[in-house]
Image 1 (cartoon, rainbow, N blue to C red):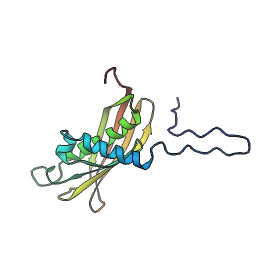
Image 2 (image 1 turned 90 degrees about the vertical axis):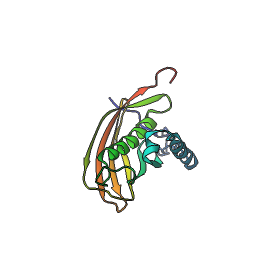
Image 3 (image 1 turned 30 degrees about the vertical axis):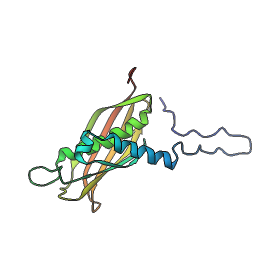
Image 4 (image 1 turned 180 degrees about the vertical axis):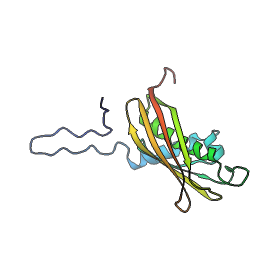
Length: 166
């Protein structure tokens, strides 16, 4: 089974090479989308944890979160907070992949914690591993302010058509 590519090439004309279609999301549209995701966090777990989206697309989502307020009793970043951040960026990417007429539902997430973070922010980058018709999987790297890897996660979401009235 093959998936439909995100950007199809224009049909070839004799003597003219195929050209990729221009990016379907111009810079202003991406900025508006980023603002929309940050506004949508109001009242959600993302807002409570201080997650701020920096970049959003189906292929890559970047967000940051403060360590302060997301710690365990020893003052270290809570492992569960890292998992929430990873699930947030992966789920947003999968939802964007699903499109306006689709939804993304988490199926699996796993995380390996490499080092402690005590202050500042951590930044998560979700990079698409596979964007299929029914599944979307992302590799998530969470780094501290010094660029050291704090956590590595992988999330897989099921992509479905939105139920009627959703």
